Image (cartoon, rainbow, N blue to C red):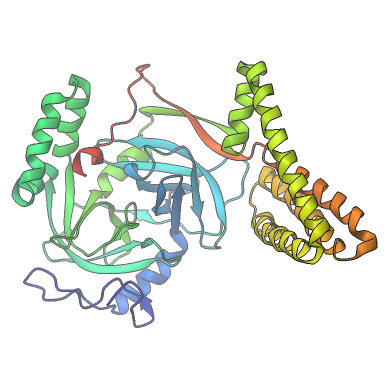
Length: 407
């Protein structure tokens, strides 16, 4: 059974999965699970970056979003998909690279999606084999899933790796020997930091998702998944509280708008080397002219086939850009995709006109204007991008990603 299986109308990940004794299988969704799923779903967000997807959840009263640090450390763009299904630009507000946690917020000036906040609890007092409930977005699925399971113990990664993965421990020791003193200190602290070990099945995409007790308190945040033992490891609620309440942030983040990568690169090149950028622009223009001339000839000799092909391309682009415009939660996105939709409409309408002999010259003119306009929209800076991360103590060392050593 896979991620698509459902029990009691609750999407449960791998129901009936064999777990390590004394519990024979992953528990099914009970009344507690159903209640928690209904309460938690409005708080969950899918975290989308330029490197992949994961999970986060709203916490506190000011729209902060908690997730795992490894989900965002190496990324330049962060978005969250709310319960309303819309994608919102986000930015990192804090990282604790030792406890493996990070907080995000919706970009300043944007309204928050409909949501509720989860309450951070404590891992102190958890009893062995106590039922716990993990939530996350499996990669490839739009809806959040539930993984019922059991708390095992509070441990450290050094003990986990030593006991279960001796070959990985050898690589970690080699990494310690070859790393610089600051990175070595971070790696040791990372490996010795307390984590929760649960008998809880999870998959890629669950990272950053909340672990709840039966009362709905967040006692952990998913960090590491070990499917070889059906174990999932969580940062504690105490570490989450510390990050949320710490006034002395370790890192500061600088964001800015950028255009489509190739357009941004061209604009940067223009500022640095106008001669080279001009040559590049002329070459690109000449290439475009050749392609345009070939298209003109195709439309002249095969007007119906050519017009239908261009119309199909224009309609496809229009569908995509219009969809982005309608779902936009940012004024720059609205501008870019609104103008792009108008340009696509010109291309599509022009292609239809080429099917009428007398209107063919005007149709070709509309196609040219539409394609040129669509190209111009690529230069609109609408991508909210992390430009710089600095330690607040003035050092240049980036956030430590301990998961690089665990892969």
